[in-house]
Length: 142
Ligand code: SF4
Image (cartoon, rainbow, N blue to C red; front, side, top):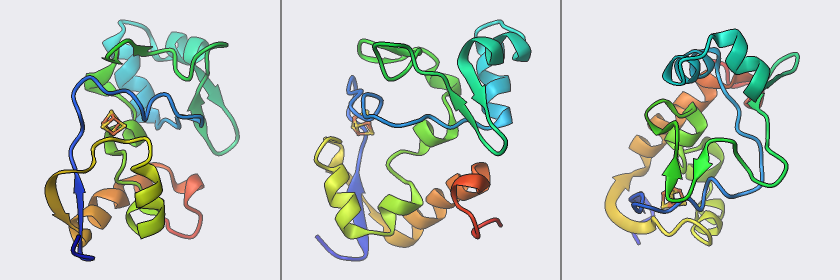
């Protein structure tokens, strides 16, 4: 593969990224959109599904799964899913590091498939992560 490009397409029906261990961070606007999608108030949604710490908001995890909203074959809040879920695998730490990108391909079958994407375009897409979650990317605030 050309070093200036990445290759990716999301494979329909796959949920491998949702099943990985880790937190799903959310923005205030993710919370608002998901609450409204589920016909809940922002406060109700937050009480049920969100942990708020000083600098971060993240989804609570159910006891025996990675995410409350993951169903067989897909995300039950897909149209309003959090920024980090929507952008995956275009995260700064993955697109800027060839080894991490390759490692991610170990569980994401979409990596190495589909259209070629210029690295500059991938980095531009990944910047939305830094804007959405400044606490996760200290020193990168735009
Ligand atoms: S692991 Fe990759 S192919 Fe599977 S749902 Fe996530 S992004 Fe799509």
